[in-house]
Length: 269
Image (cartoon, rainbow, N blue to C red):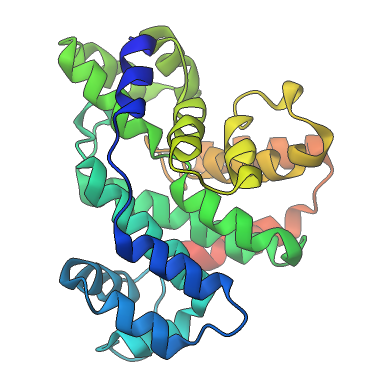
């Protein structure tokens, strides 16, 4: 199965032109929110999904967001880039996540919860790492789309779904079925598309922290903690949060900062 997934990654189509234009504007010191809005507005699907995210309970803005410019002004350019990247990728890969017991809307929501938790928590830990971590947290489950597709092709949906539903470690179930994990596949996908090397490496070592280079480990560890608290099969459950807190304690993080972020997320979940 791993060989099939690897071959599929090699044949993935390029990301749309709008993705590269958005990235260029957000990376430029002279880039403006007006320029960004104009690019996003050329893609009606991107507009619709961005406004849907902006008006979701996850962000709980006080008023309805009715325009792209308004959304960008509230999110900021960095977060807007992350959100539009996520939207473009999920559209391109045609999300079908049934083997994980989810519908596409659930998958999108849980990815959003992971990124929101990362932002609320890590701004108190190391805000300089947040741009990379927010985007990585939003995208780190992307590999599940390819794993799910492979499970469907091999007619193993029922057995896989049953094991996933009760799994404490989803990565172990994935490893047993396809010979690799979501983080490894996600890293290969983004390497194929030429994403930032730091983000690719950070995702790559989430399930293999012992092998992570010293300069990468903090990023991978943060992603693992968030993923542990908000897993696909039990997001923000008492069990998931307690396991994440155990990992926090082991790694010497301040529990209060994480708990505060969790509580803020749960208020709007």
